[in-house]
Length: 405
Image (spheres, helix red, strand yellow):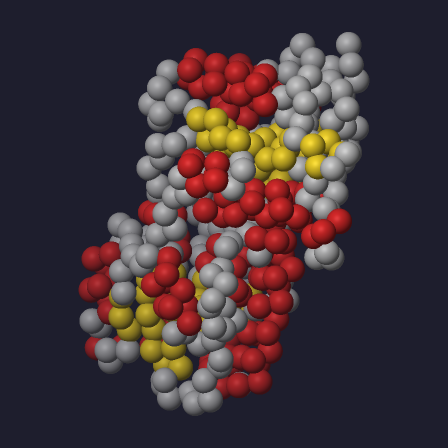
């Protein structure tokens, strides 16, 4: 039996199938497995990895995927587009197929690709992740396996589930959490603390031709914005409560959800004086323009018994275009914002209002936050930063022609 490959070191010498050669070198293969493998961000990261690092990339994903509302505006990259980039693509059975078909597809892909590293962009509790780990039960040498962690509240499951996790999870080599709250959540249901983890493994793809938002000089048209699902826990009502106390300020809402009618009705209240509007669920190009129209993004998420804020992609969006962020300290928000925005105690509408007033009244603060946010996007949440974190987790080397990050 062969020994497992060393942590943070890709060893492709013992591979059963030859890898693509570059010059006199043979490249290791990284396989992404996810039902959302064709999500544009993942596709962009794969392309960045293949061009910047000494690695060949492959994908096992679902061609037919119904996008949740929060992702629908981004669209979907087709398998053929990835193939045109030189990425090997294998497909999972359509959604709704028998789980045995999924399991067989995973085993066949692992055998055919023979990866040196596997990136599972599913939760560790999901069947896909567990099936990947189960596929290596009789192999002492296995690829370096990493798994994303996006959720931050997990169910312990029944006894059979807990025993299966306890048996399989130790085969993981590295966790790729979007935030420390996610890491804490999965450890609370039994993930071994001995498994290494990266930090803030997430990102967004900003358009390259986007002009950054220059802070406006006046305060008479100071404009705050909300982007997200229209549900109570996202705190849209707190934006309106703050707006009542902020003269010379308007508010705009982008998104949709069960609270749509409640929001539309609330916008008509006399105390707002017509200073707020709902712009609907926007396509991503339109959403970028929406961000650019703002002086400040408000993220007033509220924790519930079954949900707390995870990564908060709208924060990274705002940072990407230089829009200041004011937010409640819910879930992972404080970690994502870092020192590039203003975070106030969760549920404290008075503190939220005061922070917004500061951003409105202090031009220097707005400029400072815009600059800090853009810098944080580049170093933590850009596609290059995301690819760099994946590369570090798997010990990939930069191509000599890629330059310095």
